[in-house]
Every structure is written in structure tokens, then in C-alpha cells.
Length: 247
Image (cartoon, one colour):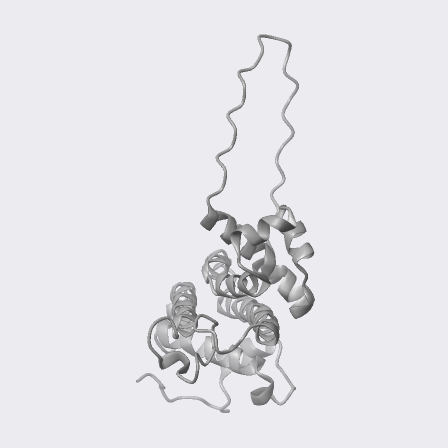
């Protein structure tokens, strides 16, 4: 069974059941008003709503579209953020959260065999890479690369190695990759008997090959799909692979 990779990049819509009819009776007590969101919660909700818009519209996304997606008035955006750039920056940082991909990998069925599992993992990673590349392409069009807190920005020439907050974006990406590698390792560990290397090494190899395949300057524009990647990962490139690449 395959799990669609597109479930990773878009918000999940939950349908609530319709309540059954209630016979007349005493008046129900007045509902307690929901607690208003704090400024940080509001910022996070707006950033989360902006991510799919960056994927769909790129740098051309408008504050009106962001407000509609977040379910707030346009003026509310600027009570939570200084300007549109700050909204987009928050969305980029929010997009680095690995939790959706980690959860999707954990939810993959592990009883169909190693090949279907690796194919599904590759499919998820390809979609993650596609979404991530669109988000960062949009971000670099509209965000000042000299800002200290822009992921990948040069922070006035210091880059990710400068002082203060200069390396926050790179650090977030590194943490994200480590968590995703861990999720892949746990998924592959179920099939340890079918692997000729440790699950941790296999997980790093899967991530490296899939992400390398998605980069235009490495793939030459002729990218492999998930099934082809799984075949290459599991079979290698040698006609008769007998060596153990473990360090």
C-alpha cells in the first residue's frame, strides 16, 4: 500500500460529524468563549497558512491571500508582523519543521516488504524536496539575503558561520535532516534482516540519493522517479555487489 506524498505538503482537513438531534429540554448553559490566541500563536497560525500559498503562488502571494487563508482580517497580519517580508520569513522557518514528514514516514506500512517501503519513502522525500525548493525560491526573490535571520542569508558576509542569529536557518535545516534520517532509520530497522548495512547508514544513503536526484545541477534535468530510486538504492550500480560499504 502506498501513502500519497502530497499529504505531507498540504494541511489535513478534518470533517466533524453532525450532532444528532437533541429533544427539547432545559436551556443549555452559555458556551464559554474560546481563549483568544496569543501573539505568538497568531504568528504561528499565519505562518502555517502562508506555506501552501508560497508553494502555489511563489513570491507573488499577496497579503490579502494570506489573510484569507489564515481566516483573519488583513489588518490583523500587521498587528502580528511588521511587514510582508516578516510573514514570508516566518513561513520559511515554519516550513523547516520536520514533524509532518517524520509522522508520514512513521505511518508508512511496514508489512509490504522492503522495496515498497523504500519506494514510499523516496516518494515522500521527493515531494518534500519539491515543496521546499519552491518555498526557498520564493523566499530568495523577496527577502533581503543580508538579514541575519533569513535561512541561507549571508548576514553581511558572515553566512551561516557568523555570530548571533546568523546560523539559525542552517541549524534548523540540519536539525530537520537529522530528525528525518532518524525516522527513515526507524522505518528501515523493521527490515534489518533484508539490509546488508546498518539501518542508520541505509537511511543516510536514501536521503542523500533522493535529494541529490532532485537537484537540477546534479541530475542534469533527467531525474529518477521514486520507483527508479528505490531500484537503484536496493540494487546498487554494480552487476554483482558483494562488498560492505559500512565505515
